[in-house]
Image (cartoon, rainbow, N blue to C red; front, side):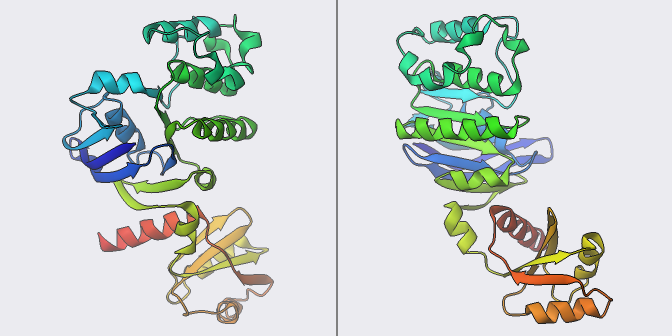
Length: 305
């Protein structure tokens, strides 16, 4: 279990974390979702005792991250956002090194990494720096697991990795969760949020919501419309002038328009656009995604500040 209580961190006048509080339950796959610069890495580096907080406390399975930092490092596996293994060592040498550091052997905990490591074992004599992004990811996870940690801290592990490797990685995390390992993973990819048991949406160092993905999407408080148009950019500009409009954003070839609850209908939106010679389009109610929730909460927060 991870318990974070009002953690605060600043860099000069920039607030990296603004009194963040959250709890990750034992055996939970918990996602920290937010864009670059939101505070995800600062939180994870503080939890791993690589940074000292300016205020607040945090514990990992009852161990204080500052006072008991040596014990914390023994029970956690950490994957930083940037590949940080030794590029001049081979795959096998990197794994052997991390096993030795933690006083164990590859053989002793091979069962824990078997499904992951078997995929890169044919390349065990290849230098780590020569691996592809997906293979580096698997090696880094194997090294983080080799000492049988109780908690995994993964900082944007799928950034810069191809779609197939991203999917494989999340399947691996599901299997690790089934083994009882508590997992805290950060990602800027909103589509990965739905795989987690619970998520926290973070922006500018502040948590905007902590809930299950489904509950978060079902709690979307405004009307959401999917607008399809042959002139999507032009339509987007016009919808920005719609009375009482909250936001309009492009999701591929579809516009997601948010309006106050009960304020508009598909017909009223079409009538507004027809006044500007926009007629070849469709307007339908849509179900909110995590990205829709994030944008709405971010806009609400800006409006209050």
